Length: 299
Image (cartoon, rainbow, N blue to C red):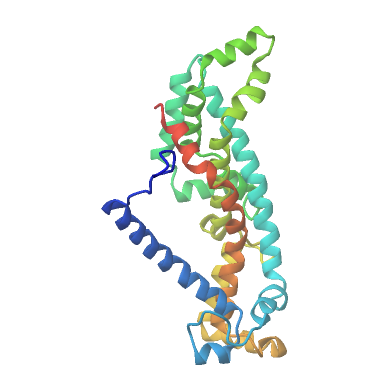
């Protein structure tokens, strides 16, 4: 006799099988090219010439990373330091402003509707590139890392979603805390913020990725040779190695160029730029679905 408590085997539906097949194909299309790029960055030019696609490096070498990190005048290390600093400071300040703004808009105060509509207006209309550039120049912030932090610090979308998250929190919790003697700051810090942990984690990652991938404004605003960010560095590497001049510059490095080649250095640069975000993403992924659902419940 069958044990009535035993679990029934799950019967796969046609739509589930189709979804698994499609998602598996998509995963393969994403993972295989990426893995091939990592392999190319770890092999020599001769091995790549013999076999452009392989699962493991034909001739293992770290020369491409050595050139990228140490033989290139330390430009990538400088770019790493600048990008990490901008990302950390910008994400902290951005989330601080966004969380406080969202909490304020979730409460009643005089002129709330006017200020909220004024903020909402910025989502659809901007001052334009040239006026923004002239404003930055007039403030004396050209060629500074400070302006890169300020430009990406505030997101109207983040504030709106987090505002909805605060509004979805039962008011009974706040009233109970007030009865126990808690003031507004205590309610905000010890009750409201912990309940919004999924939203804060989600938008912290979104903000950090935005800073990390930023290249347009740095390209326009940074003019000093000693100031750069990772995405600009990656862009310059790709442009230089694609051109004949870039190849000549690499060849001039002598010993450092023996086991390097343009495609290998490009793939090494891509992997080095992506690695930090790839490491952080899995730890915050569990908050994504919950965080977006909490903020989207009430509009």
